[in-house]
Length: 108
Image 1 (cartoon, helix red, strand yellow):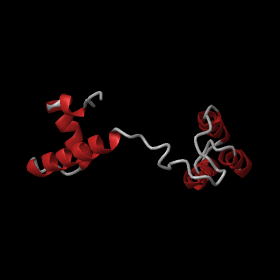
Image 2 (image 1 turned 90 degrees about the vertical axis):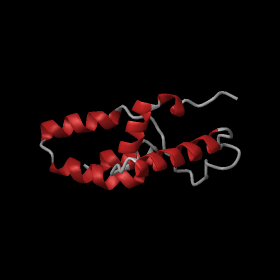
Image 3 (image 1 turned 180 degrees about the vertical axis):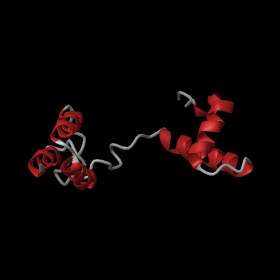
């Protein structure tokens, strides 16, 4: 059990934060369900860099998106407060339904 998920983690296919949860769930499954569960993970591509090098440095950061996300987040929070919605996700969904053009990023 642990070897399957350890290899995925070591290959960068499974984030370390999810490793324990996936292994614990795997242990509780029947053999048939375990095969199906593991097949979901088998097709994953490497997404996690475990080399110890930080990839999110200034060279790799997207330039144009910083202001867009901050401005949109503020608008959604104001919409949430104004409409007394319980969650940010509910506010974003409702705001998108009402004004989808706000979610379109302008090309520079």
